[in-house]
Image 1 (tube, rainbow, N blue to C red):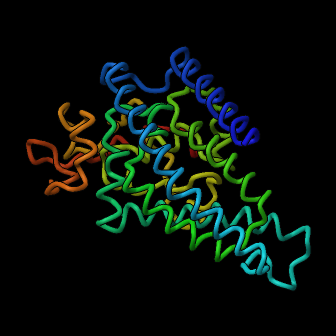
Image 2 (spheres, one colour; image 1 turned 30 degrees about the horizontal axis):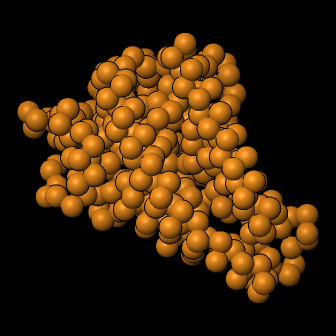
Length: 285
């Protein structure tokens, strides 16, 4: 219990530090007042905490106990040395999260819920807490499959969870890092600029940069896009860009209502990146 509390405090302090830093060194200009967004996103966080406590965590713990006792999992294959097994488990955890994130964009039912995360009109560390309880409930089923398939040890699972949560806060933040630091970091991990492109209203940009931890999964799957400057990105989902869409009640009910055309603006146009794209960015260079 004390360990869980300490873990929560560390994550909360890290989130608060990012919140302060992104105010001092913003990457993108804000479109909407901060107070209203914070109220909505922190409300989602409260509901998410309860959902995770009731579904995701018990499902993960139960499966982890079963996998540990049975010695089952891809990371526990007999020919793997004890040194390789933890590394393989950690990498497989991150790879399967890449696939899960991609599934949330490709499968219509999952996207209905994941869309709630994407319609936030600004992207900052508070967006990292904005996940619909329905999406988190689905993720409990994914966790069961993931842990049963991989068979990570308890300490590897806890380590990955810590790194994953810290990485999620970091790459959702609106923190502007020096360009050289971004270029260096993005070779290995997901950065604020890389994930900012994923939250663009341009469909082909939203459907890129799915990685949660290591950026090389996007390189391997050819879904990496670094050639978009942050000042050219309009955060959100075009079909749900009205202010009323981001009221708490509307956002909670969104997955259960008749869907709109996600990618079309109110005037019927679809956001796209014009020919000036080649002159933009230089993250990939």
